[in-house]
Every structure is written in structure tokens, then in C-alpha cells.
Length: 160
Image (cartoon, rainbow, N blue to C red):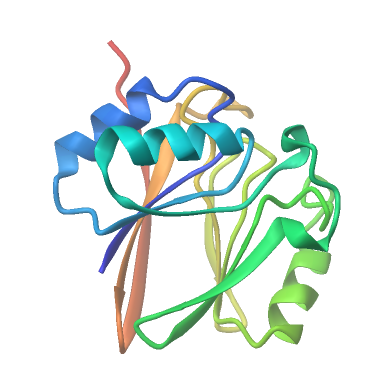
């Protein structure tokens, strides 16, 4: 299963829709918040399966801002990251991921891409396709999930 992961679109979805249509073999989109309504609009435009969580600008400041999903035998934590204070470090995020017995965590909030494995857990932040920070280009992520493996990559958008 191939999953497109986006976060922090902040009302601008054209490039996300364009990239989705370019790849054509994406089975699902995960939107990690800021803005939740963008996820709903993207789903309408591309008619794809969509899973989303709310971010700090979506008016959600509670534990309801995360979800755990299971796909291809993998348990994945989805969160925007503001409740786990990911702008400071990933320690709270790590503990939450472990406490929920997840083998991957997808998060946003920082607008900075992350694609690392630590202690067997995949930490993936797709960055932002519209408001990147830290000198990074606009980006999203792709995950290829199979029962025995998970591969992930950050994809930089080439904006013309």
C-alpha cells in the first residue's frame, strides 16, 4: 500500500492535489493537521481514502488530536505533534508511541521534514508543501507499506 502523507497545508492544497495526480498509484492520503478542512477538500478533489487529525490551528487541544491506525500489520500513531511538544524534542512523542505499541509515528507541526528510525520506530514528518521552515523546500512524504516492511521517503515539490 502506498500512502501520501501531508501536513501543514494552511489553506493551500493545489500542489498536494497536483502531486497526487502525478503519482497515480497512491492508495491513501494521511493529513496531519493545519488545516483539517484542507484534508476534507483534498478528499473531495481526488476521491481518495483519507485519514486525518487536527492540528493546533484547527482548534483542537486535547488527546482527541491523535489516532492510531493499523495497516498491513503495522500500528501507526498519527498526530499533529503540538500536544507532544515536537518543536522542543521528540521524547514525549517517543513515549506516546511506545505506550500505544506503535511501530511508526507520523507527525507535523514543525514544518521541517524528518525521516528517521530510532529503536525500531519510524518517525516521519512530511514537512510542509506550502510553508516549509529551516531552509527546506516544500515537501510531502510517501510511505510504502507491506506486511514485512515499511519504507518512507520525503519528496520535495518542484514549484514552477
